[in-house]
Image (cartoon, rainbow, N blue to C red):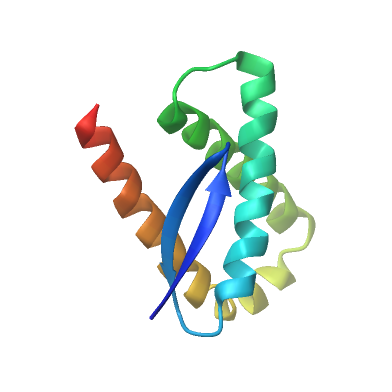
Length: 102
């Protein structure tokens, strides 16, 4: 398992991912960071966990709309998400630790 350090909203986070998925995780983190910064610009500082939640919901909404627009792509996309799911699980575990410290 590899570890990648990504920056979200100006803070570094170490993320575990499958070997060979490091660049993909960096790309996804950059996309997520863009959404977090968009939310922060719209609502101001509400804390990282809330920013992450709102950005995650924006991404989920985009994914939902994309699936509605192209239902046949959903089955093909499922095969390529295993490494990403692993990375997201690692991020979720990190967020839980942060939340417990608040």
